[in-house]
Image (cartoon, rainbow, N blue to C red; front, side, top):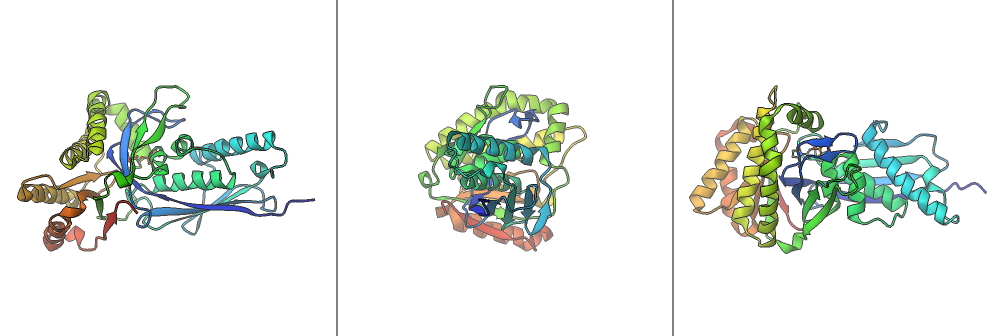
Length: 350
Ligand code: 2P0
């Protein structure tokens, strides 16, 4: 008898913001990075992708994806790699147990919604591919750990591998040519450092000018500073950052976060032709954080910027008034760019 069932599973995945940045691929096909990276996963309640994966023999032929209500292309190599890897794992389960429904042969229908602007430098591809991979893994009932799923999500978008965990997450670059050791691991649970907060200052929700994928390829090809970054700067930052997180040492966490953001944007500026993601408003946020730390007489806030102008400010809950209060008054008063900005305070953990 024909199987007319619609099989379905849903999941959410959060955004992560790197404090030691991924920038550079050593293998573009397998999406293998030139360096390890480390991020903080933000609270699900604030910024997340909600994804439902379904499959049915009754669906018309061909996999489909609806992203924020619009049909989206699934023919790209990265989405195809994720579908292929997940189907292969499901097919292995079906081969081992012939009583299982043959989901691996059915068309997939993916429906995905972000609750934040796509392509605003807020790592929508990270939450998006993490949710896509986990939703299909749930649909297929794969017995895969988050680190195993991170190997698949990495092939969708590098930073996505880090969104399969909460808390503090390292993406180990790995050494193998086949990428089987380039995966994410949790360094610490969010509850290890429950006072940690992230504030996102949205300068612009517009799509970024140079995509991360092409920007980092240009950097690898042309920047001399980048060679120094991957050889010495990032390994030093990874080690110091993991220690700072384990010891809940905010001053060191903050210094490495700011230095690594500066180092990443310096290699962007050293790319030929140069890439500029920060703008005048971003630089005003850096000055404001410096003022806040100077006035406090200790490091109470850290800024970081991804491939866009928006700022993420890390601070501890007990310093909310001096950090958030001062940022609102300093940035809100005289700087045009912030006037229409959305300011969200994110609690860690959810
Ligand atoms: C990061 N970024 O570590 C860094 C910091 C942007 C700046 O990961 O080509 O969208 O899909 O692997 O993951 C953005 O890069 O790039 C990114 P692909 P991805 O979060």
